[in-house]
Image (cartoon, rainbow, N blue to C red; front, side, top):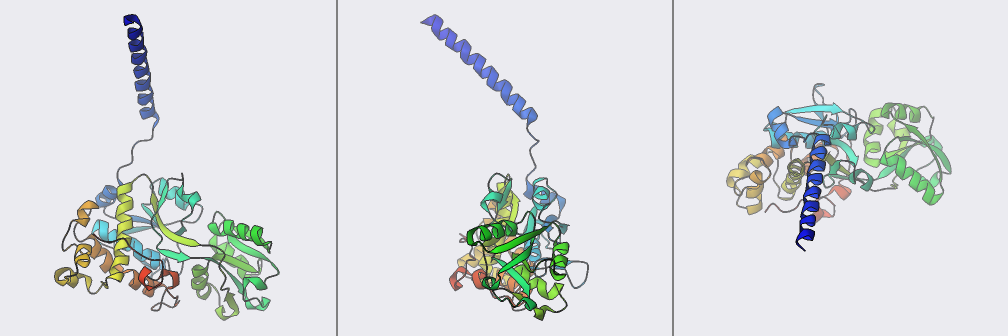
Length: 353
């Protein structure tokens, strides 16, 4: 019995040595650990946001020609304000559907603010993590009025301009497979080339997120009254901010900054009133949101006034929506599904407690 036990001991020792050697080799072969993004952004002093170069209402050159504005740009600025102390501490990196995820994974950008649709294929095993949606949309279609079509049901057959490597391409394929409707895709990598193809008649329809069509038609065509954006949508397009999925602290800082903007609208905290309310508010959740009490900032690796800076950077969620896409913009989009949860919409933030 003693000899048998000793044999087991030698086998266990050899096994332990083998496991140790394997662990050493794994350590040698593994990629170097990435520094925490939150600390890296603080040390760098500015946030690198991946955006689309020309997406009216979402990300475009501002009136001064030197800065940018739009719904996603203002969200980016809010995060910059929360993390770096100044909403102007931003570097914009222009990306497209083919380059954005690799730019995020390799650290070229810290986060994607480019109207990315959250899907299982993008979430599972790709190295990308998505915040709760910040904008709810659906895939739509636009046509010239000369065709006489006003809804998708009017279309007997058509060639459809669509972006490559996009949810629009996949959803169009699903739609034609499901319905049998004769919609033939014409696929483009370039957003500009795709628009040119549509405007010159190479395709009778163009498809992408419906809000994008509503905001682009007035910007892209000389006679927008001659184009009709169909009321139909053929998909759900929950648009989210995306970060790498290997850094939970950074994910939390970004996600809760976005939540702060939504909670501010619900609590009626605006860009103009936030600073005063930090000193005078008696509502407990407002006080926690603005850092007048509690330690939310510390838990997120931020200071007490992180949410105050995010809100004053460009307003609460409702103010940002109105200024860039809604009633105070040239587009006049209704809130619809992007209304707050207590106003019939899908936008909500967890409690600040």
